[in-house]
Amino acid sequence: MRLYDKPAHVLHDMLVKKEITSVELTKDVISRIDEVEDDVKAYLSQTRDEALKQAEAADARIAKGEEISFLEGIPGAIKDNICTKGIPTTCASKILEHFVPPYNATVMEKLQKEHPVILGKANMDEFAMGGSTENSAYYPTRNPWNTECVPGGSSGGSAAAVAAGTAIWALGSDTGGSIRQPASFCGVVGLKPTYGRVSRYGLVAYASSLDQIGPLTRDVTDCAHVLNVIAGLDEMDSTSSAAAVPDYTKSLVEDVKGLKIGLPKEYFTEGMDPDVEKAVREAIGKFKEMGAEVIDISLPHTNYAISTYYLIAPAEAATNLERYDGVSYGERVDGADVVELMTNTRSAKFGEEVKRRIMIGNYALSAGYYDAYYLKALKVRTLVQQDYTEAFRKVDVIMAPTAPTPAFKIGEMIADPLQMYLQDICTVPLNLAGLPGISIPCGYSRKHMPIGLQIIGKALDEATILRAAYTYEQSQNFRNEMAQLGGKN
Figure 1 (cartoon, rainbow, N blue to C red):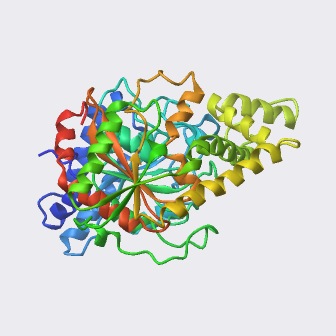
Figure 2 (cartoon, one colour):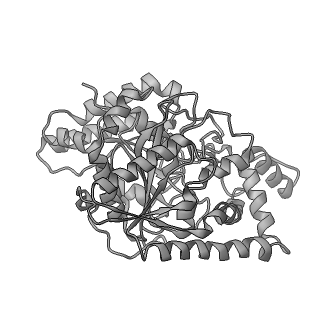
Figure 3 (cartoon, one colour):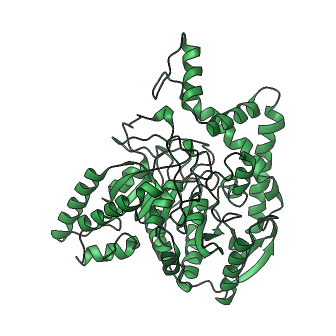
């Protein structure tokens, strides 16, 4: 029996009914890793021995007749910028090559209370800076659908693991689309919660006002369950929201009648792949058939979002990455004095994309340019936020493509940073506004690569986007079709 390609909620029911054991499930997923990991390379490190111990403990509790949580005994993967006590957390960077955190991120503390099986840490773009996972200092992850293509980024390892069956669920982080875009490229579900809905404590910072942890899963049901586990106020994170957390599984209702869907003209950009536009418009047509109302809207400052993001995010990154100096912790390259030591360390241990963003950020923050660039970007960010506020007076959700293209070939854009940055056109506005968004499969290209539909919600209204996503998912057969079409899946 193939267990590795089933969603977590099906496996949970099988565990409760004692149709399978967690050890059987974990061994099945590990055998899947042995089968495809050399091709996909979703993991940076694996914790197999500990995973099997966790599975044995889950089976012991089930044997005693104890009630188990949703994730108990179910194997998952953690993006390698989320601190895990006693397990290397490298951020896919040479400067943290041997760093082992002495503490857990808050999301890990929440997860461990659920007793899941943790298989290891997933590959990513270095310090989450990239959209293809080609910027990992160790090796690129490949898309399970076509290993000549990227899985997206920066949470490419997490998305690829779920798509390939080498993890049942995963955690990623999203600063400008880093959960949603790889979810789209890999044909899985990925949700970026509202800024502050999930604690950032223990998430290695890229851009502190934009970063957010979220789930990558097989389907919307799993997504709601994982969000239930990780969401909530955390006193260790001053930006954490104190708003009550609902039970997101109660949103899993097939009903979009009367739902007002905003269709922003700015998201259907010139140069968008025609397969993407066709699939997304057909999906929105399906919502109309199910009783939703589609309203044309405008988000006029969307065209400035990329420029705004690539000033604010690098500025925050430049500040956050100052701590990696070869002195306090992390790797170092010696020099004649402390200045040379720091220079040598940062020159040798940071990758090209990280250096590029640090330089952009420092330039934007420098005397004489702060007002012209960074301060102006903050003002435009406010305009982007106001666009959404105005739109949500008329509609309940906004729908758009997750990415302007399906997954592209490895090496195709890596030499052209601007072209790579433009891949974020559909995702970065949400991070600037702090809003929740989910990417769900809505079809595939003529080359049989997945395409994602992005559903955007009001602040702290993950429930509505989950309901819309679930209703659409239940009306389609993409999960089964994708399982048959996918290369490694």
